Length: 81
Image: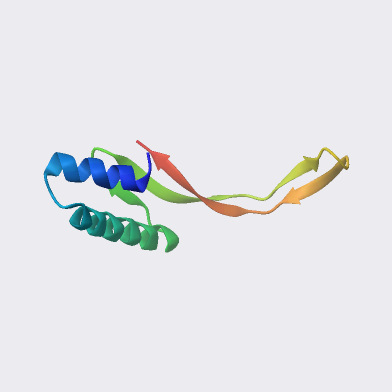
């Protein structure tokens, strides 16, 4: 589902203008993004929890060249319901 589809469906169900729904959704997403980037988790009752998780560096293989490569550590988003 795309953001536009979500805005359309929410506006239809709530009988509210699409522009208002889009503003609210953008504000919600922006505040959630700020919290996650700063290392906090976002809990929405009835939906789930979004939290940043740091994956450690690991050794992988480049199959074409038959060599080991280092995959760097990274932060990704974890969703739990």
